[in-house]
Image: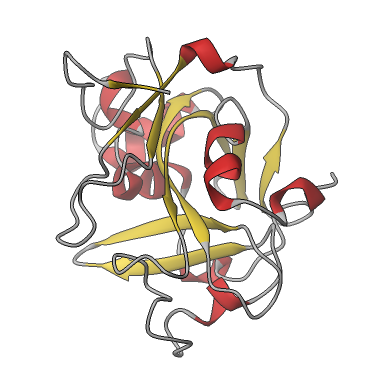
Amino acid sequence: MNLNWLDGDTLASARRLLGWRLLCDTPEGRCSGIIVETEAYTADDPACHASRGSTPRNRAMFGPSGHAYVYHIHRWFCVNVVTRPPGIGEAVLIRALEPEQGLDLMSERRKTSQSLLLCAGPGRLCSALGIGMMHNEMDLSTGQLRLEPGRTVVDEDIAATARIGISQAVDRPWRFCVRDSPFLSRRLPAANIAA
């Protein structure tokens, strides 16, 4: 799968990733979901892990586009898609999925059978799919964790809002969502920003 289209504008990539399938093969089985919510993080963004330069934790962000940047926060893992050429630390956080394959395994991992809660949030979706640090820096075109074409999401169906759970650059409308999806990590505000 060619992911060269990720090697460019991070905001455009965050929108374009909506509708793509994120799939993870593990010894326990395959799980996947359709991406319904993303957040963009750019090199000049104070909320971005890469804004102060490369560290052992964020090294993957400075690697090739189309690779995974996985990090651990509190008790959760979060998965990002690197979106710029090597040396430029930018990525898109995958915030929510519409569960697709492996629902029983996701439910077992998440200890819930409520489909709306399986992948509603970056930590929840990593738990449901079995994503961890072993997937950090993985090529998302060929690895056990990978992206595949899913469904088309047209511009009219995309909403943009402020990002969630950050304390800097909170006013930037860089959270992108499939407007009518019930699987979002947080409901859209009534007056969400038109994309």
